[in-house]
Length: 528
Image (cartoon, rainbow, N blue to C red; front, side, top):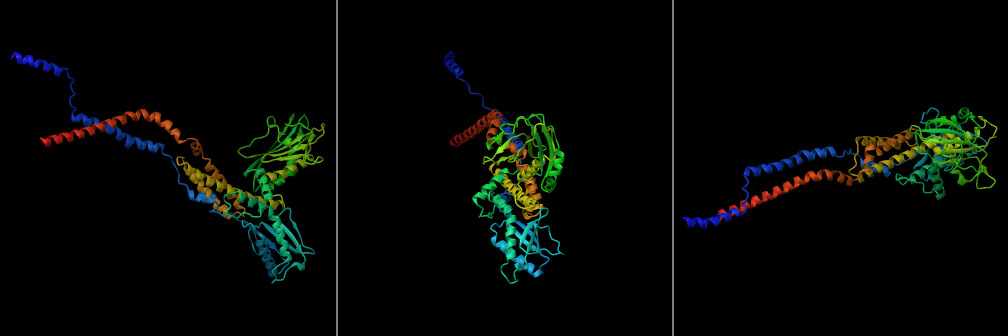
């Protein structure tokens, strides 16, 4: 017995020195660990991800992108300005008058090369009440064929000799040719301006005036760059600057009432005007030379020291400056000089020479500056130069209607392309409502371009689409690229997700190992 114990003792010591394997994990513990890992991932996937998706989802209202692009490409609207011209020929028999209108209309249609702007003649009858025409032609018999525009109303008075009336079966008439030439001359500038606007827009629809010369296009381009952008209200600032202590008073209120307010009242259907005045003593101009060259005009305004009023309550400001001094503007010819110049989209400067002893500027002295300001104001607003003032203002309304219609349509296209280019940008419901309102008013404006309501609908459409395009929540996201999201999420989710991912991987490996072990145990049992 002693020998057997001695022999077994080394084996026992060897077994004690070997590292022991950990006890087998209980199945209940394995399942508990698995449930813990799965519960974490279940909470993340079933609760965390939906909450994150809901709270960070981008709200994108549905926009009619196809319709918006059609407006910008000119497929939804074909801009046409049908102008009604009423012909009054009370001294002619009705059949002769109808024949004259027919011949004149045929001549106008044959010569018209711009289908977007056409005249429609109609014979005015005493008992018939029609819409107010763009122009009324009064035909009265006389010795010679003459034409004169009424300066206070859109009326063209034409006298004709009796022998100028063509026979009823005639295909031509001298009087019809004369009326055609007069009408084409009256509306030629308006037609060229609208044709130029369409030719520079993507909404042209192929109705440009093909005979618009490069020289005319260049002149119209200068006119467009000089004209102020349309606004319902403009603020007019009248300033008197002098380099000394005199003059220190001026009759600006009486001068405005006498020379300028009548014209502003005529412009009321198109624009509202607010007015303020100021007088500044010891005002030094940027250039003090006695004769100013064209290069000096750009630096004459001393914007750093002269208190020129900025835009008030969002209304664009038009500045009219009178500077008292003996300076003159040198023109191209050495002997020619001028007293005023117009600054595009800004206003006018008038150099008023006065004796040093005069301390007051009377209303009579301000007459010429006020008349100059009135003419320049019409140019800054984009009024055509030819024709009577009522015709020029009605043409201005149609030109502004076309400009606003094109601008609103192009803005719709820009908004649609922006929406397609940035899928991650938010589109609030306000933008969708603004687009819907814009398209509604664009349809109304397109069908009433030759009428008074066309300007109102085009203005509302332009305002609504600009408000939608410059929505604050959309503008802010234009400068938030996707790379910023990585910079925000990675420091937050990286440390939190790493243990979860590693734990899930480890648990999957254990599960695979247990599956393999079960298969091996099953094979051994079968082999035994």
